[in-house]
Length: 422
Image 1 (cartoon, rainbow, N blue to C red):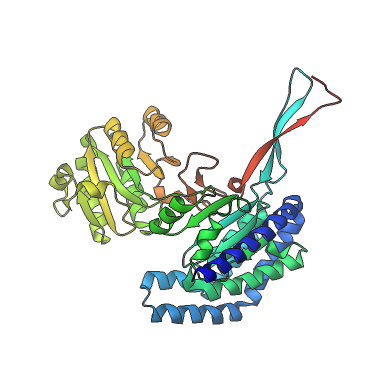
Image 2 (cartoon, rainbow, N blue to C red):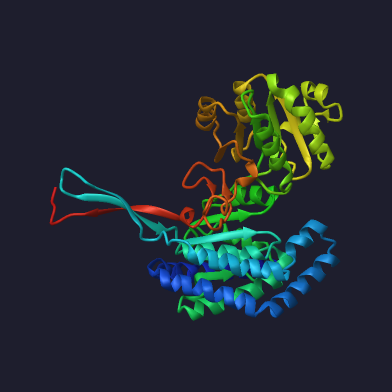
């Protein structure tokens, strides 16, 4: 077994070596070549849909045999619409502005020098993800556009689908005369591949895990390469006592029920005491009618008797399900104290018509996205105008919030003189 793991680690190192070489060529590639590759990959996916669905059907069959749950099987399936969606996503990324080489903040210094910043790729990005084979195309696209080589390791349940998508990617890269190692899809399902990838500091510059909390915790604990991640999406909506009631009810209902399984779904609702009687009976009835289980504080249960008593654990739980915690709070200070204690730094929102309170909430709530009079489920790269995202970061360094093309770049200083000496 040790010998087998050694062989897997050696093969991953070789992928890393080739990706490092490819990254140098990609960093110098012009926008036309990168866009040509993206468009060719999109065409290859649509032209090769029969082969994609044939391989995907084998993954689906194996998934049924392994008794994967219905939600996992749904994410695994490559339907006609999902193949078209992958192709559409690639074309959208191709249409985005190319951030690489952009120079900003050029200023003259007293020395006569011009000093500014140029946006550059990070280098080689390792992406580890579960079940959804469409992530293979999405991740390849956003890394390619930002001038980064990528090493993609999908879940074992989607290995045939991912390899089929990789063939389309290789076809597109060849069409644009870009190196084949610009995008590498790990073909082995051996877990040793992940262990090797996340420790390969000489060849990999950053790791992006996409999946459940367990996966992200394992990667974060074991990685030696820097990780862009978020662990939880415990998102709050606070309804202030100066909120427009109709607006507040509509936003809160949408924040919970738009989609239960996304990381931007509202998991805790906070309502100011003086407005609670006007909001909670109506909103509670709407949520219960939608099949949402309410877990609430005593003040909430006096207004919504169908709610069950919340436990301390409920305030710190990301449900990803039709379950909602509700707490009545005294005021904005109590709301922000609750968010500070139980929040995960993902997305938090205030509903209010009071501009000074809105500004205070935006300034003092320490989350990657802070919203005013908007549903937290808008926390998404596409909705933010990024075109696509590789994930959402709740880290504080480098990039925070939805990570788009620009988020996979860094900046270096550029200094221009004219024979200038010091």
